[in-house]
Length: 345
Ligand SMILES: *Cc1c(COP(=O)(O)O)cnc(C)c1O
Image 1: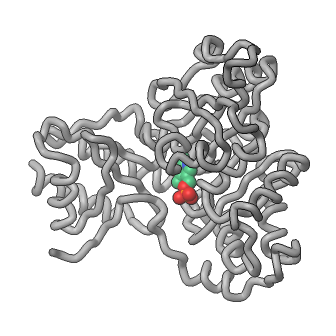
Image 2: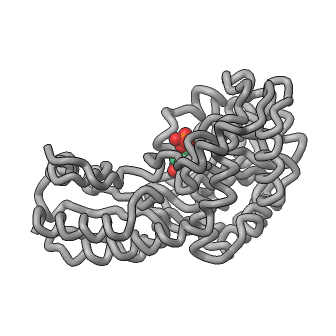
């Protein structure tokens, strides 16, 4: 096998730079289970302020963040509504059923987006033998749909619907900063419509570890307790929180470069015979390539590309997926395009 020169499997493969590592190495730390880690405290305050929420809590991963939100918001037997391709439904190992004993009701979206009107028929009547509808979740940007942005207007409508129906509204904002940079709408503007928001530092922002869950004080108090139950109370966590702080200071605005690379890559690949890309979904840093017409499986295409030094991940049964991030340059992307043209043409 030739050398791997571009890894497009995910924006989680980025490694901390020298400067980020220095910030981590020199971070002030303390025991965060005692609430005494100044760097963790600073990160939590920074994120809460950015999102306009009362409190934020640093947690180990985006899965933990989403699952803690569910745990704090729901009771066993409740029902939660989300889009059928949601990360929480597909990639979190059925954790809602394991950790919170809730049932998920899915709603089919268009490019990951559903509309407020579609929620009404899903709300359960208040009778004892039916599950209690408790929470609605949206994902922004939507991972499996290809990094698509959930329109703010629709978020507003769903938020109003949730309020009038006594439902909690949760945002899986693992890539909320990508949505914000692409639209110019601040993360605070997005966040105000939700009861809780999860954000990741280990995706496009390029930090090695961690996410934050944000909301009002009483919600975060509950989440704090459950974080300990879930085994997520970390001691001198400031050493990793420093990477997240560094990422917030240095790596937000530059996300637009990833979006530019994604657009270029998608446009070029869509010119290749038998590769199909819904260019409308390429709104941020993810590209889903439908490979059905090649009459090969995603695994076969991924293997051929890997032989040529380019790493993709599997999308669905008929697609492969590329994600742009700060460890790949436009030059590498251009080179990858030429290689792929040679190999798959
Ligand atoms: C990555 C991701 C998460 C959380 O992933 P972790 O690997 O647990 O940090 C949650 N939601 C979405 C949409 C994601 O892309």
